[in-house]
Length: 152
Image (cartoon, rainbow, N blue to C red; front, side, top):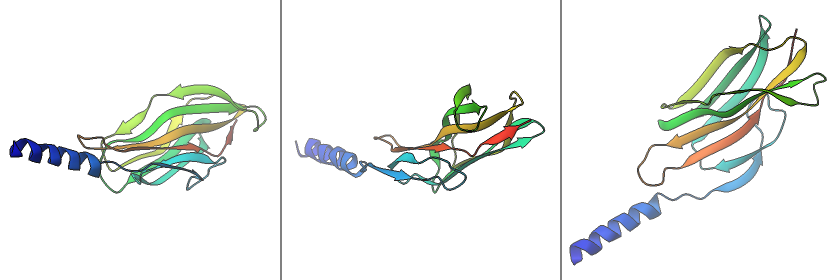
């Protein structure tokens, strides 16, 4: 009987220690953001950035999502490229597949996407991290919007 209660106490302790609080705050991304975002803070993502530029008449995306520890998944989710003719009214142009890796960071440098010339473009996405662990691993998602760029 004592063995069962010790095991129950151990499992209960692990479950309690593995819990973390989640607080919603308003925040700006660290680089080139044009909108505020809603952040669920658990401290997994220590740095994030997102920007676009025109490279050889293509949209080039540069992004960083960094953590202090190796994550089960880290990178970008819900990646939407938006298009505008006037740089103020935006519509969805294309959706990209999630870009997630098992590492401490995910970085893109001038990841190019073919687009139609004569429009402004920007990227909206979620920087995402999910920690390793068997019992209730924490995850964090930070929404971000890049600067806009005209592609001619």
